[in-house]
Structure formats: C-alpha cells, structure tokens
Image (cartoon, rainbow, N blue to C red; front, side, top):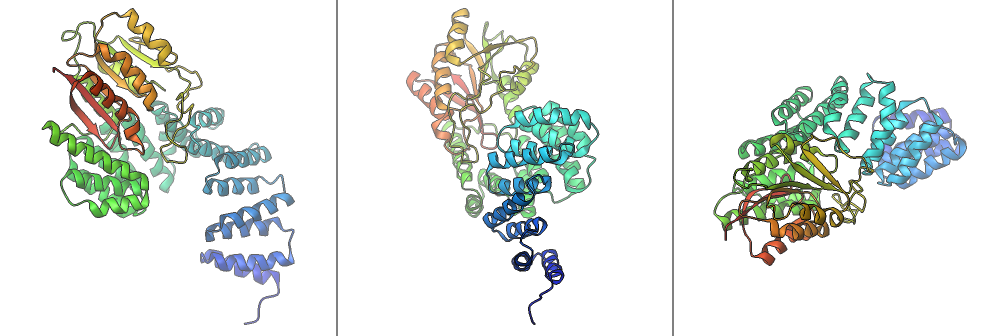
Length: 490
C-alpha cells in the first residue's frame, strides 16, 4: 500500500491506532503529520500522549515542551506536562507545571486538584491541605474536590477531618467513589474505629468487588481480630485482583509464614515486585524468633490503635504504680495521644518540637525514606483533651526539666514515636532510671521497613543491654511496624 499523503488520512490513521492502543504506530503517523505541519501544538500534544503510552517518557516530554513553546499560556499543555513529570517521579518540576496550569486557567479546579495530589505524593500533605481549603469552601458539594481534600487530610495525619469530605466524595460513580470509601475505611481504622472501618471497606467492594485496596484492608481487619486464615484469604483475593500489588503479595506471604505454611514462593514474588518487602519478611522472622525465645506469642494486630489500646491496658494504673508517668514522644497531629487520653484518664504528657525530624530517617529515594523536617506541622499544635500537657521543643531541651519537676516518679507508659535512632536513644537514656517492673514501652516504628534495625529497635536493644533489663514482648506486629515491651522483675 502506498503511504498516505493527505494529512487528514494521517490523522485518521493515528486516531485509529490510538483507539486500538497501538501507540508506536500512532506516533509514526503523528510524526509524519508533524513533518507537514511542524507548528501544530495540538499534534505535538497527541504525539506526547502516544509516546508516553508507548513507554517513551523523555521523547514525550520533548514533544510537550515543543508544544508549550508555541502556546506558552495553554493550561492543558502545562497540565499534561505535570502529569508526565509525575510519571517520571520529578515532583518539584511536576508541581511547578501544575502551578503554571493553574495560572493559565485560574477558575478551573482541575490544575489545583492536580497540584494538591502532587504535593501529597511529594510528602508535602500539609501544603496540599492549605491549598485545598479555600477551594473546598467555595465548592463544598463538589465530590471531586472532596475526594482530593479527603486524601490530603488523611495523608497529613488528620483522619477525623477527612471523614466528611470523603463522605461527599463517595457519591462519585465507579472507581472514584469506591476509592473514597476505601479512604474512609483507612481514616476510621486510624481513629481506632475498626468495625466501622471494615464496613466502609465492604461498601467499597459492593461497588467494585475486585478492588484490591479494600480487599487488602479487610485482610488487616482479620489480622486485627486474630483471624489469620481469614486474613490469608483476603490478601490472596487482593493479590489475584492485582498481581502487581507488592503489598498484597507481601502480606499474603507474611500471614502464610505466621501460619506455618510454605511462604517461600510468595516472598520471592513480593520482593521481586517491591524489594523493600524484604524488611517485612525480616520482621516476621523476628516475631517467630521472639515467640520461640519467650515461650508465648506476642499479640498481633492489623492497626496501630488496636495495639496501642492493648499495650495501655497492660500498663500499671495509679493504684499499681502511684505517680506513674504516661508520656508520648513524637506527637505530630496528636492522633495517637488523643486516643490514649480517651482510653485512660491523665495526666498525659506529649513531647514534640512540631518542627519535624531533626535529621533524615532514611534516604529519600526509598519508599519509606523521610528527610530532615519530615512530619513538621509548621509549628501548629494539635487540639488535645484537657488531660494532656504538651512540652514543645526538642527532647534535649524539654525532657530533663520535666523529669526534674517529677523527681523519682516512675514511668508507667510511653508511646515512643521518634522514628530515628538518635532521638529514640536520647529519650530512652533519659527515662532509664524511671523504668520499673510493669513499665510499658510502645515503639511506633520498631520493625518492617528498610533499615529498621538501625533505629528504634537498635536504641531499645542498647538500653536493655546497658541496664540488664528483663523484658517481655507484649505485642509485635509486622503489619503495623510497632512493638510493645513490658519491663519484668529481674
């Protein structure tokens, strides 16, 4: 067949190829059309879409940038460039492109929503919340705005505030509405409302029965109530729904391993999909070793609030330990401290600079990496019950004075959410002389992430060795990364 000469025929062939998802063929036709019409920004935009879908992001970016040189005030082109940069993981550049899209179309909500999504993905969720607040106030019934706002609030550690917009977003049809319900399930779990959380996940599955996220979430619900066979079935269903979901494969492997079944193939698959899941496998091995060494199985949970409540119930109250201190180190948005204060009367003491981590936790290229300043609230203090006293500042500046003001007071309970080794070691060194038989320490990031042996777990092991402490592991959960330890009589 002779090659087409008319540009209309070239474009018709390109459209047909794109409809059939034959991206390389579509790109060839579009390039031929551009040879005849090189200053056509619309053709360049279509070529960028075809190249990106073909798996050639750099040539796609070049086509978009050529289009933008022709139409620098075109919001749609800036928007596409932001999405392409997002796919390349170039967050700052993508956010800048989304800002340019918003500047070119200031009344359109879509560029602002994209910018907010990018801020969340760049771990700048607080900025996304600030960006979305006026937009949500102007469009309170817009479910797409509500969906993005709810996701940003959840990422910013504000699940209670995320519930209302996510309820609005649940009106969206198809996957978007089911995703809103899944996010509601996550919020409710973060707030310790586990039964409601499971119901929200079931509602999401009523919309889309094979949606992997809610299936995975229900697996965690099963873990939380001790139903490991049920959890295995849910994780297996999530894995079947999306074989590329590394977390579902890894959690399925973890449950099989904990049940004593052959998990070797599942672990290999999980670590091929996501090498970071080797840390989960190590944490499961730690659980099994702890069980064998101590003779009793540590409690296992699917959600952080459940483990916190369990550990607090095991801590001595005022009658058993008069004057016992109850503290949290690393308050952030106050979610866990609020839950603890609601579960047991105070006084409670929360310690945090509210300026974020004083140093990097893990390299930022890792999925779980966090740099210095991560978890900053910008100095904003959370609203907490009257039984809570906040001690604002770095631990080195606040903890010595606090302990001096409570001479000889034993430590009844501490939730240690310091993340990094140096801060955890600083806290444990200061508290060492206040530990008594019955004191309970919860570590929020004890295991199951890349490099976990170098942080909270290391600082605690050093404390135990230095002071020859006897310890019982009350709970250890690879699924929540927490551990709860009780000091025992020697």
